[in-house]
Length: 373
Image (tube, rainbow, N blue to C red; front, side, top):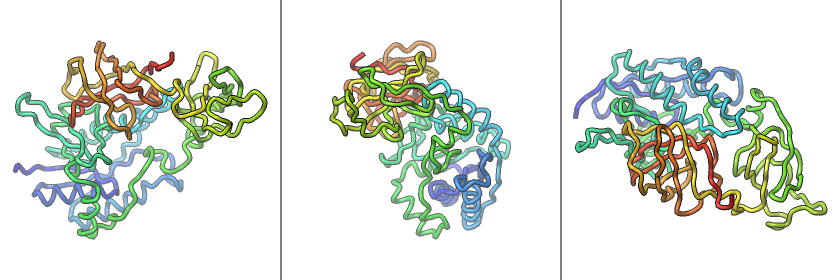
């Protein structure tokens, strides 16, 4: 096995710590980097970056490797956060983790690592890279652990990026990663997995968004045009959202009874032209179900679009792959139709295409086409 000079991104979490250990055990020359991507809240209870760096440094110390603290906050703000706000202000729901991987972890970090003389970079993502001998192309494959696979977030990676990337924990289950960390007595072996968006941490999402986007109230209407309340601004809601609508238990005369008085309400549509938020009762309301979608800004792992035909896709991270047909591949756009209607397909999120275990790439959902138009 060829030995590389590898720069590993140590985040302070257990996955990247075990990644660094595995690389060292394989005999590679390993250097660690801690990426700081956000600094607006350094003194905040929600920003864990100081503790994360302490954890990363103690792992590097235990494993006997150098660690460098690199600040990508300016790049992050320009390339990821600005786009995140633009999308929200346009009424869409972006996925900043997808952007962060494309612009920071596998661009700014990769460039920095190459300047340090690295041949490869490594991260703690649950995914795999395999060189297909027949085509000469690098394939992005799902992680072995179906509950942890992160290929969805990595679907914008290019051949050049994949050729230089290692994902050692992609071949392991999370339970095995935890076991290795405990055996090595890593200081963060029992550390909880981070959840949510890196710059928001564990704080309430709406509170965070409120600092950057002004409230812009308007009416909340149901599917029969009855007014149920007022929203704070379309940016603050996402399709399929059930919590925080402020309309629980509406029982005044003429209130909708479609799903029963106490059936939950879901955000079903945003109508920017009239500044209206539409809500419906019941998880399976037709307005929440889509049989097709169009997507833009496509990025294909192989460098070109796959042939139209039958595949599977995810329209959100934690869903099962859904059988679909790829059609209308033109320029950077494409269309997908699904055998079974998909729930709360959300503009701004990523539609990611798979051929079995292989992640082919994807694009940003532009429009969901509902079962009942």
